[in-house]
Length: 386
Image 1 (cartoon, rainbow, N blue to C red):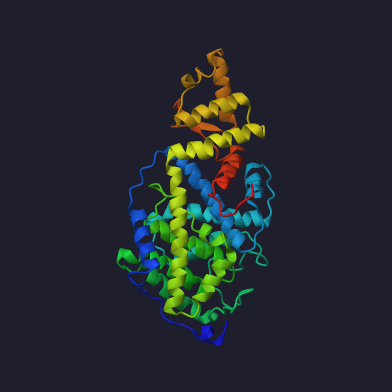
Image 2: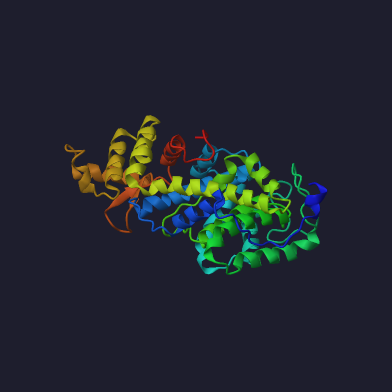
């Protein structure tokens, strides 16, 4: 970093975008999206399978920004296999995935404070080699000065980290008017990256922090949105770092441009992924083509494909709904066919101990076909990896 950037330090504070600026338009649009009542037609259990899938994609994307070369296909294959000995690259992604689940489970009842951020860092680096993507002190701020590889930014000296992080978390928790929430997310991301508080794992931790803030501020996965913020950054890793660096001088212009970059990407992701709440779109563009793809790859039989297409058409179906497609088959044959699909985890009960079923793809080989169709329909930030 140049000498001006090295010496830069201003207390983190809100900035006021000009009323007629594109950034103000983005804030207004996103504020509408987060407050809009989510009323899609996709079955909740199908929707939340998609949510978990996007958690996986988010985790892969976050690791890839840091130089992990695992492809989507490789990671999915590992998750579906019974292999116990997994490599560190896979463990790194699984750590991020577990951290996102931790956020979903805890964010409603917790403030985003220093303890919470330290916990996210523990999830990120635990079990990884300190010489690679781990940290010798999980959950603890660095006690030494660092340099960032291939970056012009020199993070502040270690003895300043505690003060800067205390200031940052006070900024996060400060009760500002809600119109500033989204701006605070962008500013928090930049300031955390600028502080670089941990010895390693800072990038993965700050992207989890951004996810936590989004959920906390109303993009709530419990009521319908799928939030995939890392997609903004991993689409173009160089652009992500260039925009971060451009704001390092602390100027209002740099911070406004950074905020516009973040919120523009977020708006595009929310609008794109919310399309999956429209079940007619989801069924025609993703689910039915996935079944055809799985049949072509001999993951399922023609009979199983026919049953799964009924599952897509009905969303929730019963054995009796299959009589029309198997007019010459007796009830025991249909029951056996359903049992095979249950054993393959390609259908699951709609409710426990009930006789209605829904399509399942989260823990079976259908997921490869689902990801292929998501890729073809431009839902994946990392294209062509399935």
